Length: 252
Image 1 (cartoon, rainbow, N blue to C red):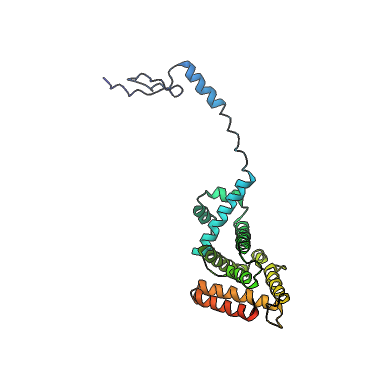
Image 2: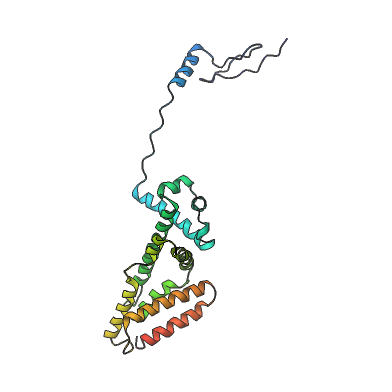
């Protein structure tokens, strides 16, 4: 005598089915459940409605998080390691999420660079506005110049990211356009501060604010990168900055 086959459950309602000793075991407990299963096969369930689109604020935050992942990869491993898949892993999201928020890798890289400029500008403005002596041209200039020095982790990371991007911008016109544009707001701001110091009698006689502003900003940019590469210490860089501020503003 054959052993009774192990009992199963109805595929529709889950009711236990009796075992059988021969033939194919039953899969439904009744003709009603069998009919339900047939109707399901003929009429597949209606897919759920798509999730509502993310709110503008949530979308902006997600784009910022993905851009932050690009910055970290660029600063730690170089921009050449920033593949879409690596960016998704670093951001803690799926590749499809990255592709949803950015049309292409190139779009993501350019957007991330623009966002980094905006982030740095926001932080710099906050530090300038926090000055207790806004009428002190020397303190104001030093605060502006310190934005180009790796005085904390945020500024150190930003400098490394900009260095990684700069090399790539030499062969990418879209990235170059973010770095190189007709407007020079920082140079104009520094020149305006020097002119104000001249009017207040605090600047050295005979200086030309515009070229002095160019020299200050280009010089501190190079000093900042030297510090990132550990070619110079922050203390030595600070001494150079103070030397030029003392030369320009001996009475401030």
